[in-house]
Length: 83
Image (cartoon, rainbow, N blue to C red):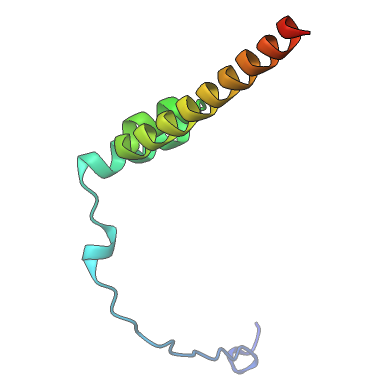
């Protein structure tokens, strides 16, 4: 038989931290938005669903760039026609 005095166990009490349950509560909308943001790879589509106001700003910016490009093309073609 083995001697039980050879077995020595030390126990350490770890500190207790109270964590609010509010941190872990999610609404259905939060979960759906998280799923959408992770599953949709197209940036435009994801932005239109999650933040529609930002999408309008992006579309306005792209529209302005296209108009500028068209004006440059028109000016270039007029210059070429006049030569």
